[in-house]
Length: 121
Ligand SMILES: [Cu+2]
Image 1 (cartoon, rainbow, N blue to C red):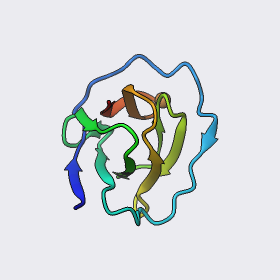
Image 2: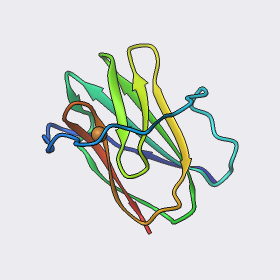
Image 3: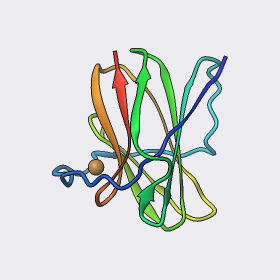
Image 4: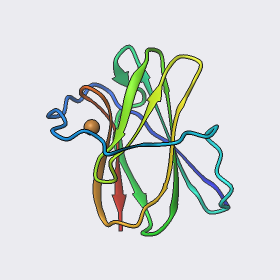
């Protein structure tokens, strides 16, 4: 069963990212074949997360599909896993990966909008 978790952020400003992503994701249509994929959606509206950012629990080693919609072009960064994508009007940013590292990882729309935190354990 696919879990759909709607996520977003209000206006929390985070400390800026100090590291740049090491790899660009290959967004492929925001589709995951894995049946038990944890789907996380977020959106950026008027420069803010919509809905407000919150924490999403992700079981260790799950497939994760992150989809971010945006009303302006924004770079989306998954901290810790160092994955990035670009979300823009008419083109959601997608990142899919296996959550094989425990911890609490921020997903941001750069430069400073926290969208969601992934709690992997
Ligand atoms: Cu970042």
